[in-house]
Image 1 (cartoon, rainbow, N blue to C red):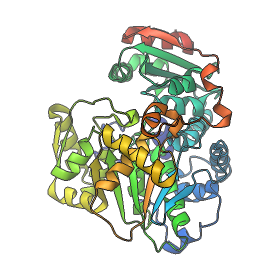
Image 2: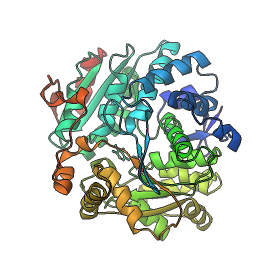
Image 3: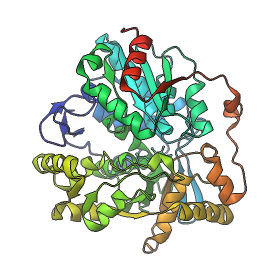
Amino acid sequence: MRYVSTRGGATANFAEVLLGGPAPDGGLYLPETWPQFSRSEIESFAGLSYAEVAFRVMRPFIGDAFTDDEFRADVDGAYATFTHPEVVPLTELSSDKYLLELFHGPTLAFKDVAMQLLGRLFARALEKQGRRATVIVATSGDTGSAAIAALKGQPNVDVVVMHPKGRVSDVQRCQMTSVLDANVHNIALEGTFDDTQSIVKELFADQAFASRVSLTAVNSINFARIMAQCVYYFTAALALDPKLKRRAAFVVPTGNFGDVFAGEAAARMGLPMEVLVVATNSNDILARALETGSYNSGSAQATLSPSMDIQVASNFERALFEASERDGLWVSGAMKAFAQTRSLPIRADALAALRERYVSGAADDAETIAAIGEVHRAYHTIIDPHTAVGVAVAGKLPRMPGIPLIFLATAHPAKFPVPVMRATGISPQLPLHLKDLLTREERCTVLPNSTDAIREFVFQRTGAA
Ligand SMILES: *Cc1c(COP(=O)(O)O)cnc(C)c1O
């Protein structure tokens, strides 16, 4: 399998896509052609374990980067870390509303689904090439903990995770800082999430530094994450109806457009579905883009669903590439102009194609709280604020009679206890194996908001000084 850049100027194989960052032309990688599964092939996945479906759906993407045995071992290992036997169970709220519970992994958010696999593949690919690497992550909470859980203890990887000091929840902080493996290096930056992101950008731009520590990223633009996420669209559709006759609308709480684009990937691979609902919080750049045809970036504001407080949805570039029938020249020009003007007018044919696949809406904090309360009262189920954004947005869409709604439940409610308490009066409990999380020993270095300070720290910790 070859991969092409959304800006038309580069190709790569799977190992390069896995270990590299963006394509050299600044674009994002996508498979040259989408693997195809016939309806009867997909139906034949019903009843198989999650890991087995994952293996079959993802195998075509891997090419010859790994043998079947190697890939199977990593897929099995990744999903054995989930505490639910079905890995990502579909639970019924009512006869036409379902929750796809994506939060049974080690850090209680959906990012584990991709990251647990990515960490294993990453270490294996490095080992095959006889290399070491330093993974650096700027995080507002969920990505950092998922990366640490996936990469801790790997012999050929150092993972440096920078969070804004005092601006992540206690649960999120402890999930990062209580991991004491020698290859895990936590930084609490005296700054904001935006500051952590600009420092990471500067470090990547410093080529001498980047090559000395072999700097890489596992962020949401890595195609391997999308590949891992498209699997649960298949298993959820089959759990809803093993004959695939009932077609669902998938409601996806969205920040960087990675999770919902994985739904597009599943559809392009042959999975029948009704529509994908792009649900954003008050940071509604995506909802506005689909409504008005103009993708305009503002400044991000803090909400009760912090993992979606994003003003530039990186993976949207992939959807634009597909919607323009893979016109890399147009995407390249449009993205370059966007970098200057923060505004991107979507070409009419691409906008029409996007609107056929996606519907969208935004919900603010008050609507998010109301949705948590309503789901609790109506179905005796507690959802987290990210999942609630999806529920609130779906409630505002024109009725889709007879169409089952599958809400992607992206985080465990105990990860965000404050809004849940406010909405329901109930303090959501951490799962048993994490009950003592907040009292575990922590290790973390507080550093000033300075790229030099971070560079020095990385040199020392990776032994590259
Ligand atoms: C990251 C995250 C999201 C958004 O996912 P994207 O792929 O960035 O759209 C939603 N909910 C939770 C809990 C997350 O951690």
